Amino acid sequence: MAFGAALAVLLLLASLAWASAATVEVARVNDGDTITVHLSGRPELVRLIGVDAPETVHSKSLARKAKSSGRSASEEAQAGAASRDAMLRLVAVGDKVRLVDGRPQTHKRDRYGRLLAFVYLADGKLLNQEMVAQGWARAYRSFDYRHKSDFLRAESEARLARRGLWAKGEAYDLERRTRVSPSKVNSRP
Image (cartoon, rainbow, N blue to C red; front, side):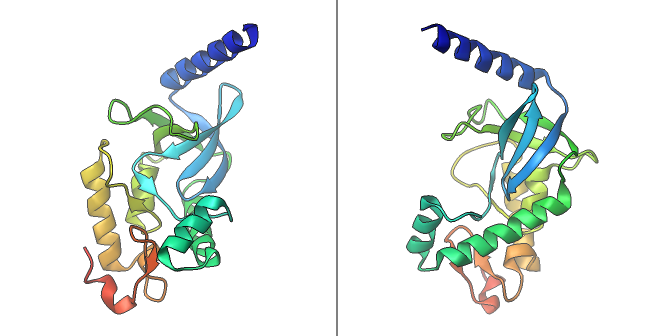
């Protein structure tokens, strides 16, 4: 009982610290939609709100997504690695970023316990939107969040311009998780 109460107090303190923290330091870039930051002296996983990037590591999730699309797990992992590399060009370990709570449109944490946040870079750019605009992630459509229309517009422009995962020879439809013929990339909204 005492351990449970202590854990609840620690989680509450971490939540309060995050709500008031303007800036944190990046500890790791995990993949194209998740980073680890130093928050209240400990590592905290942060999931970028409104963004979905391909998986990077061979897991049940990666295998399930690859199987449903008829692609190999290796293809999913390669796309995920490209997305993570793109994130590393935008933000590096040691960089200072500002986390902005996405509520009330989203929950504070996802089902895996990761903080859900909009992540602003030192230059003021919104990392979430930059990943979509550069074509390394897609915008979530299944729930509402601030900036959703901007993210959807950025994805459409990235597809039309064949940026990132939409590039010629690397066309990859994240929504359907399938490869797309380069000739069909521009015909898709």
